[in-house]
Length: 448
Image 1 (cartoon, rainbow, N blue to C red):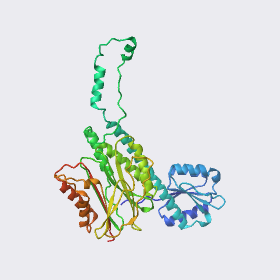
Image 2 (cartoon, rainbow, N blue to C red):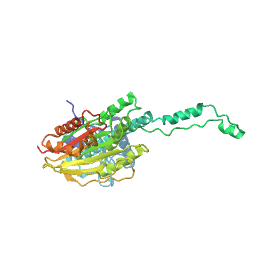
Image 3 (cartoon, helix red, strand yellow):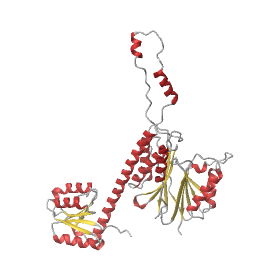
Image 4 (cartoon, rainbow, N blue to C red):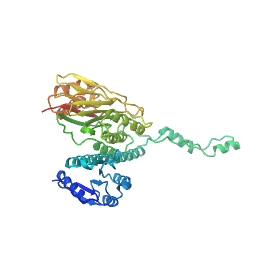
């Protein structure tokens, strides 16, 4: 069985009684804490660099602390080590800064020590998660750049052939003047434009590219559904070909909120998959920084617009935030819609609140009207591939059929409703080949 690693704390004070008292208070809240000690500011910096503690507790009475405080804070901040400072009121700062907490010595007790350490360590862990996600984002961007190079569209073959003919044909037999002889000495060469990503089909994709796209697409999908008291959540995604441009995810946000994202990118193969991988990385970083889904979606739009550039991609995305304490549902949408089905089977449409991503980089995508998701009510998120499933007679599955399947099964668990809907639309279209992916997420209010 895995155990949580023991808390490592470095106590820096020139007074032995302070070190003993703080050690005792620490162990009341953290019985397994590993405590080390330092008696000067220089010794504190050296010990922190060597031992890499989870937290440093320093007393302003340390020799040269006031003069060397800034250097100590900077060194610890670079190492992502939080600092708690005891002061006597004379050397307090207005704001301890990032990863720094200041406590009045007279107010220090078991409770304040516990709260200070727990709070500042949680802050550091959050930033470490952001660091990891930003590294994931950099890696994704590198993959995207690689994909741009490897899937570059060759210039029109007819133009290429014409260029080849122009270069290889002997010059026409014409009387030449010295000036014309100079001009024709070097044949004109037409350079292709900058590479652009394939936006449809897999005609020019290699097996390696298809394999990479399938692997990235698989990694994009969440491994399971979140367990949130009062809600039953399930999602699935199936592709018309080996890979597609659909995406959904469950994003933890600040204040213990959950954000469900669902999106689509036009095209098929490696290019849209890489854009959705980039989108996922952006979302995971931004969702940890704020609870404002309008801000998250608007900032993502700026990033995606820069990524898309001149490419002909359409990216739609919807964010739905769930607050399990108030049962409030907030959403913001760039070109997607969702459906809210109450216990009687009545349907409210959550319309898009903004244009698709990538069209204008300064677009603000506002929130829609918040609502409640009560017991027995269902939020249906689905890509348009569900409604576009087409039978052999050319008829589409459509919105009404999709909603009827959910309404008829609304008393069942979310995962069963999602699978019934998947089965219904695919059987409706069978045996026709389908060009659109199918992604379904069901969120059901469930107090049982």
